Image (cartoon, rainbow, N blue to C red; front, side):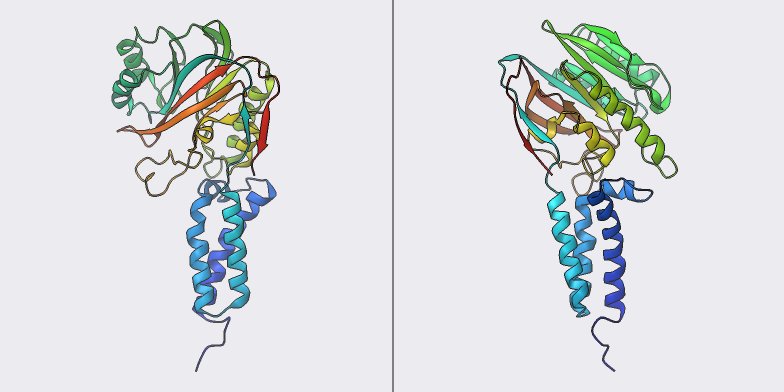
Length: 327
């Protein structure tokens, strides 16, 4: 007996796949991060094209035409949201200083031996190191004391330790409170004050999504607290542009350096599978006073994050700024 169209295992497969993808996509459309497992899956939104495409194939083979329309709509919406989010600013002022920024999560300090030679090779001016526990901090301060005489740190064990290294003089700043250390400072970049803040909010683990949102909210409050001073906010945000809590940070006027350099979807985590599947949760965010002309993601042995290196330029008074709105 031949199964009627719209029934059978093919239809059930399509329903299962498209329902799951639609629930996550619905959160993205509604501007909410939802509850577990939505925040975790939103980080991999572009990769949901695969189950949505499989759902379309199942609907086609089952000759389930309403499901086929559903799958096409889901695929179209996913493609729409692949476009980068936020504003692109074109600083109108003259260039004042060029600098290189590097951020790296060294995973409980295990990536420190691989980070040291990269710092010697690349000579970044500002370095943000997350999960830099006491041994990591001691190693970096000893090995690179001459290159980075200025530093701010949260001294702690495990994932709670963090460190900012700088070639520029640093004036202490309050930093942002969080589960893990997020030190801050004001750098004197060739005579110009620049706020520098390390970001490392709690990850959106099941049962801790509320904490994750609150700590991203504190970073948002920091970004919105002083819009007149040039700012570099960098680190492991545990969030991608598909998370509403992260987009609220961008809405304060910050722009992602990786996006400016054409790498807005390059994965940074997990590094072991980033060349196949991953998400970009490591960012260097900049106020409109900056332009970015380069960004690279580096594999460091010993850690599950890729380091991000961004080459940026600080500009003078921007005057009239041109901005285009992404989705």
